[in-house]
Every structure is written in C-alpha cells, then in structure tokens.
Length: 418
Image (tube, rainbow, N blue to C red):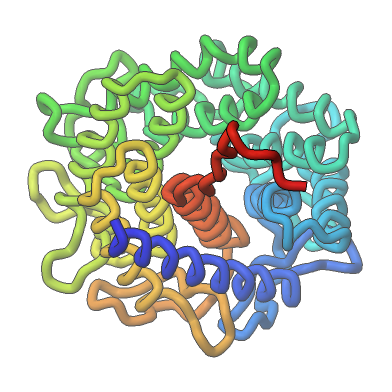
C-alpha cells in the first residue's frame, strides 16, 4: 500500500503541474479578443497559422474552461469565466447555419460566417455541452434553455428522423451505427444528470438506450470491440465492419464505468473493464514501439486508413482516464500498473517541455510527425480534460486511503480537560 500511495502522490503532482502548463498555453495564445471565441489553429509555440474556427472546438473550450472554473479551486478565476462567456456568446451568435434551424456549422470564419457543414451531430453535441456548463458556472438560464432545446433536437435526429442532418439515404449505403453516436449521447446524459435529479429522471431511458447500443459493439463472441455495427446490432461486412479504434473503445469504457457507478451495477462494471479496457488495450498496444495504434483491422489485415499506425494524443488521454477510473472502482493494482504504463509513454512522447501543451500526432516510432498544437481536431479539450479528471481521481484515492484522524477517548472517570 505504501508503494501504491507513493505512485498516486507522484502522479497527482505531475498531473497538477502539467494541467497548469497546458492551460497557460491556451489562455495565452487562443483568445480572440476582437470577435470572441477562440483561435485553435496554433503552431508549436502558439503562433496562429489559420483563423478558421471549428464549432466543436469552440464548444469544447467553453466546456473545459467552465468545468475547471467549477471543479478545481485554483481555476476559479473571473478571467477564465469571462473567456468562456465570450466563447459561449460567439457560439450563440454564429454556430447555427441559419437562426431558425438547429443545425450548426462545422467551420466558421474568424468573424463567424459559416464555411462548412458536416452531416453529423458532433458540432451540436459540443455546443450543448458548452451551454450546459455555462449555465452551471454562471446561473444564467438562457444557456440552460439553449442546452435543453438542442438536446431534444439531437435525440430526435438520432432516434427518430435524421433527415435534418442533410444526409440522404442512398440505395447502396450501408446502414451502420458508429460507436461515437450513442457514446456522445451518453456523455450528454451524464452532463445533464450531474446534481440534477429532475433531468437525471428525464434522460434515464435515453441513457439506458445508449448503453445498450454501445454494448452491441462487442462482437465476435466477446473478442473484439468494433467501431461500426449494423443498425440491428450485427456485424457489417468489409473494411467498415472490421474497423477497430482502441482509444475510442477505451473512451466508451470510461463513459460506461461512470454509468455503472451511478447504477451501482458491479456485474456491468466487470464486463466493461474486461471488454472496453483490457481487450482493446492488449490488442491495440504496439509491442515494438509502445503506444496505442490509431486503427486496427479485426481480422489482422492491413487497415485502409493511412494513419492507422500513428500514435495520437487523444487515445492515450482516454486510456489514462479509463484505467485510473477502473482502478478507483476496483482497487485492482493491475489497472494502476496499466495506467502508469500509458501515462509514462504519454508524458514522455507527447508533451512539449519547451513551449507547453502536447504534440498531437506521432509516427509509429513515437517521433513528432506534426508540430502543431491545435487544428481542426485538436483543441483545448482532450489533454486538459484528462489531466483534470486524473488529478481529481488521484485526490479522491489519496483521501480515501488516508486513515481517519484518531480521536482520543476521554476516560469517563476523569474530569474533562478545561
């Protein structure tokens, strides 16, 4: 136990220091003080190389700022909340393609004109997360109304009618369900349910539906987590059906662990750890160079994605959260060892000690392939979310492991001290 406690103490300090450095990078370089919102296309030293604004990254940064402001005392600073409000107001003014519609753009110009729309739900998901966190941080009910209205629209698109996404049903298209869709909705259910019994009740059935859909991605008699399955839960033919993403499976794993914890379901918890943490890790860890492969083929064929063997920042962030959450739930030292294995690789290979923040894209050997710190997919989200969640879990573990202070028992035959 002493050795484990030393490990937890050391990692808590590393997480704390790294989170401070990462957030300093974004607060110094990304704030757009002219138009509001955030500039996220940043080079290694923070220089802006493109002023396009990606709606999902705007939402993620607003969420991250508010979350830190609410949850970690040293980030409870008015300037952080002011920046989040400026980002939220930019989203309210510009995220929707047209004011009368719920569909959000994927890319905006710096001043907020729409450039591109994706026929998916993810811009809207992170818009919703941002609005809910803004309400929690500010108490302003306009953000709450906006979050709930978009949540209803998202649920309608996913469960009833996707036509509003602008995705026509072509006769040759495979009717598939990617893991990301029920996973993101489950994330939103947890977001709304935090300390809100009314909303927890309202979205309980949706959460159960999401978990059922996610669990359907465990295929081949429990030997593989597949990224895409048929709408009826069966395996798809071809490359699409064989595709695996170890990091994504582990991210789904910690979402599911949070759900199992709320339900008090130890049987589900054990199933999740086996299928969504250990299985994708052991199949996805590169035995030669370390790190997690980005994509794999369930039959061991060569994946078709050109970047399949690269090591990306976010799968490793998600794996760190997943293993530490699993250890927190079970106390299994094997899960703590896997957390340490991933964390040591991640801190060694991805972090930039010169300018701060993490590189996002390494080649298979672990060398930096792209020096950018932000772009269309990487912003102020996966790294600080991982660091903040790990710091909080490590704090909780250390407090739980600390013996309660011994209260001296007064001898009833003696006079009380005065």
